[in-house]
Image 1 (cartoon, rainbow, N blue to C red):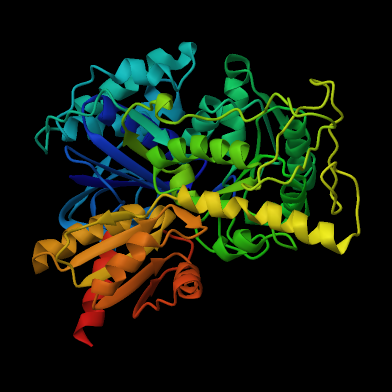
Image 2 (cartoon, rainbow, N blue to C red):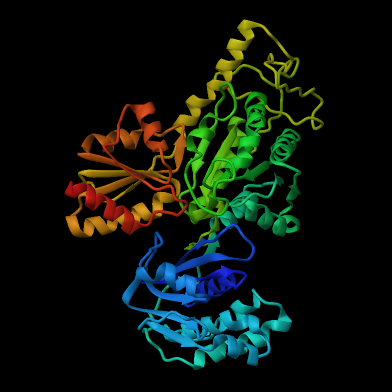
Length: 556
């Protein structure tokens, strides 16, 4: 398994170079996982991508590097301490830093001779492919997806030029993942929504959620989706609610700051019992925070967002594959229970790409709960039922009047201030939670049954925790296991109660400062964690960081 860092300033083609390299490697058969770390600026600063690849499944990024591809001196300065002793640095001749592992090539000069100074990154890709013993068979097809036809020839020449100036350093390993997909979390969410029958998506651009809207817009004609860029997040969620009321399967997406503006309208979805899917791709806050970084600090917020009480489901996405299927499932839950379902992702998953098996939309059935109303007499939109779910008709598609209201209302949908009706309607809505709890998915259990230390996490910590458990058990004969939650609210408790009883130590791993999952577990079950590993600097925790932190705790 290899881990490469491609770094430089914004505008130097870091993202394009990494994207082309990862696709060629995946086509060659490797399992690939890439994360992206970039500053909130158009030019300058320090950005990098970590491309990890190998012949076995990869669950997490690593901060230990086999190679650095440096577009500037700053990349070497910031990351040289992470480079393995036998690693390499690939850079242009202009780089001023000296190191025994540094390999300089006149890539900028070669690019100018080819007539396009912007292809120096492609020369670097060619050098890397030769170093790792890769053929150029898939390069033309991959490049054709990134560059316009008139620039394809010069890019192919640049690739070949880089390929010719080095010798092979690493032996090619035969992988079996060439036929799989390579996809980001945000793209997976977009495809999951389209596969679930999405008909209307509204959003205001906000990093790191924007590429969901961009992807759906690119699919709009083919998938039959209307995509609306709203003037702000308040308008976006209200548009989605209106579309859902009118019978279109609807969704909106944002990050934490935008979700803050959506809070009152989320209550409208709850009070009006209008199906809605909302995704919050988390970034550090409060306010603007770190717009292009990652964090898990919105959990408690989305669980309690909007005043009053109404049922909702909160699902945290654990990886790119999970993002597709949980998005489809979110639509099913929203439609069947007529509630808002909130998906929690983050920049690590949203912008990161990973190798996944081809998606199978038939694995998830998305219900169409709009009913034919055959009861005698007047249609009651909010008819009291034992399940709490009332018959739903679409206005204009029935002879019946369909009335909703954001005020408390009676079964007909008319405003009321009756104390008796208020209690009855609140009870009706909250009854949905009983059925929802029966559908909750238990957390992933990772590791052997012989554990004595149980690690708990949620969402995107799934990958680092999974790898950390493997590393720890390789040294300790199976002492470690983990539970990583996807469904977080309502909190599934069966596996947690069962495994926590057997654990001598319970350690939570989260990307926030206050241990929000640990607090939720304590509140819901009375179980308290005995150890805590928190990270909230805007960068995702890696498996080796978890291992190091646990070792230090054991030495105390």
